[in-house]
Image 1 (cartoon, rainbow, N blue to C red):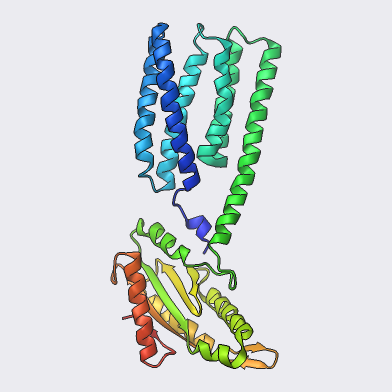
Image 2: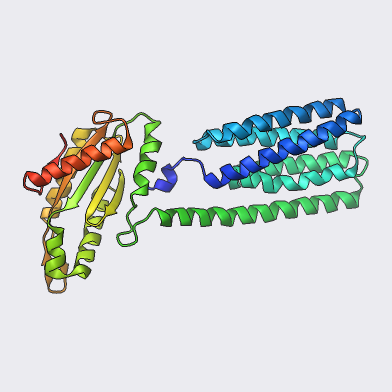
Length: 334
């Protein structure tokens, strides 16, 4: 399974950007509310005060957000309020053409906070609104309409192109940071991420901690290069059995972990036993070397064995050591 598709924890970079934006909006709206109130634009001043207060409240709430969905809802609300404010300002006949300049910052803000897809929709809607309002204003000559539209489209295109490349680079960087260099399996960072994701669904979640039996002897007898090849061979064997239904992780050295969501513990035990049996029927061949090996495994499952990530991992690890004490080449789940 792909952790990038399942991982719904909020992107911290967007969180920092939104925090900066809400502080800026709160400050700017507060400043202009005073000016507009003094100039007699009371309704506009009231809207700006309301948005400023809402932005301040969001500043403290953003720190507590941990889920993408909530983040997108909050960001969409803020962008919508900002669009309403700018539209109200631009449609006021007493305002100057300078007010339309604020429209040009919206694509960069929207893409930065909401991402490529939702940012595209918001920018498109707001771009059309901007052109329509400008057409209806006293400044809307044919040439100025074309010029304003071209400027806005250029700004939108640059933001869209940049965000598209940024998203691809972020996904690639995140994927590489979660992979083990030797085996290309996930590294142990994924364990907590998967637990956090499935904890919200209140579903079965099992941890299988596995360790290659007598791996030190393999290194001593055949050398570390062959030992590394054995690790890759074993990683591929685990992927063959578990990749489509769970997450295969290299913990370090010869220790691995498999996380299986939405599968009952009895079925997890059966799957692990089959993986062990199939490994026993397989030989790792490399030139003149022919290596047979086995593994020991311990299984823990939520909610029966615990309600925290560290507790489940510790119990699975203890059962792994019990499997070793009982003679290795076996699976222990209780």
